[in-house]
Length: 194
Image (cartoon, rainbow, N blue to C red):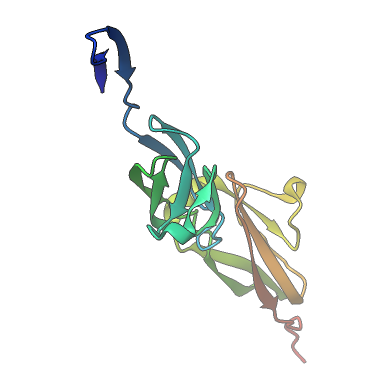
């Protein structure tokens, strides 16, 4: 790249001068932002990239430098599980760059739900014991019994005197992750003495 002077001369000594400039594109630069999964294992993470420099149009490929895998003008990648990804970029002149991006896992709302049985006077009673696999999310979740309606959610899992039969506990996170866990309440007769 640079500015050049050219002189063209014929056999009689006549000459002509002219000047031209060769430009060089800026190097390709790729920046990326990752969108984490919503729930652990939901495979709904994503990556958005921005490309500058080089010579448009740009083509990109996810985890493969094979020319057959490049797609022109693709800057968004969705439906990704948590993990590390490499995005390869090529411009119109086959200049190349790449960026390594980490997609974070979603929140883990898995829990162990255990019905606990007790007696209140002579009547059978019950409540739920809920143990989250990831206790660090405890202050970011809400719970509902047999419902996924946001209006039915409450801040703690204090559910008592649940009728016998099949049920589910819904656990919801502020990022939109929602899981349901099935459990069953056994039926007990009141204590009697004859």
